[in-house]
Length: 255
Ligand SMILES: NC(=O)c1ccc[n+]([C@@H]2O[C@H](COP(=O)([O-])OP(=O)(O)OC[C@H]3O[C@@H](n4cnc5c(N)ncnc54)[C@H](OP(=O)(O)O)[C@@H]3O)[C@@H](O)[C@H]2O)c1
Image 1 (spheres, rainbow, N blue to C red):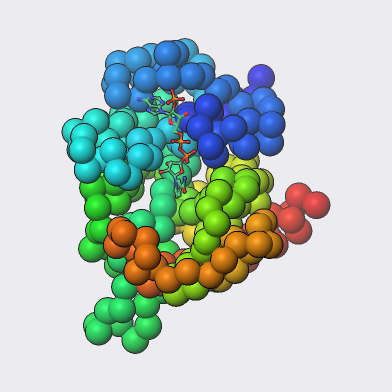
Image 2 (image 1 turned 90 degrees about the vertical axis):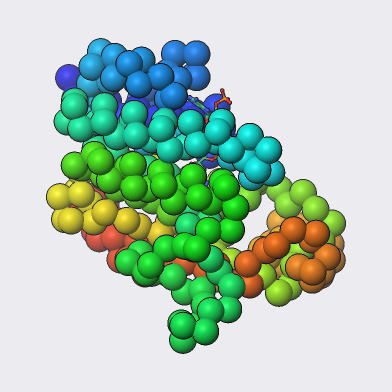
C-alpha cells in the first residue's frame, strides 16, 4: 500500500480546510501527536510511515507569544525540530507551513523596493516573538534532508472587521482560496523536492488589506494602519512566480 500523507494541526484554521482536500491523510489531534514530545513524534512516524508530513501545527497567537514566549518556542521551534528529525529518521518528506512574517516588510533603505520578496531573499529582521519562532522553525525544517517550506498567509473565510487598511500591502488571501494550493503542493512534494525546490511562496496576488477585505465584505470601510494600535508592515507582498510556474507544470503533468 502507498505510504500516506500525515497532516499536523488538522484542527486549526488551515487544517480544517485541508482535511476534505486530503481525505486519505492521517490527521491526528494533539492528544495523539503532540509535536513538543520528540519520542511521541518519532513513534508515530515509525508506526505509520508517512511518505510526507504536511506540518501545519503551530502556536499562532501573536500576542500570546509575547506573554508566553517559551510556549510558542516549544511548539514552533522544538516541535518543528522533532517533526524534521522524525522525517529524517523515517525517510519522509517534510512540507513545512511558514509565513510572510519571516520578512520585515517596512521601507528599507538597503533595498530598492520593499515587498515583492522572493524565496531566496534574506529573511528578517523579525517583528515579534511569533515571527522569530517561525523564522527559527524554518531552520529546524531544514534538518530534514527532504524538505519543502511553504510560506503563506491567509485570513479566515469571512472578513471579521468593519475596516481594512489601505496603506498595508499584502499577498494574503482567504484560507479557502489558499488551502487547495497548499494541498496541491503537498500532494506533489516528491516531484518538487526531486526538482530541487526547497522554498515556495504559496500566496495570493498583491493587494491592499482594504481591497482584500472588500472582496468578502463589500461594506468594509477604508482605514489607515496608524489606527491599528500595533506595528504593522507597509508591504509584505511575497513574489509567487515560482509557485505559479510549478502550478502550471503540475497541471500539465497531471491534467
Ligand atoms: N493564520 C494565519 O494568518 C497564518 C499566516 C501565515 C502562516 N500561518 C501558518 O499556518 C499554519 C497553520 O496556522 P493556523 O492559522 O491554521 O493555526 P491555528 O488555527 O492556530 O491551528 C494550530 C493547530 O496547531 C495545533 N497544535 C498546537 N500546538 C500543538 C502541539 N503541541 N502538538 C500538536 N498540534 C498542536 C492546534 O491543535 P489544537 O486544536 O489542539 O490547539 C491546531 O490544530 C501555522 O504554521 C501558521 O504559522 C498562519
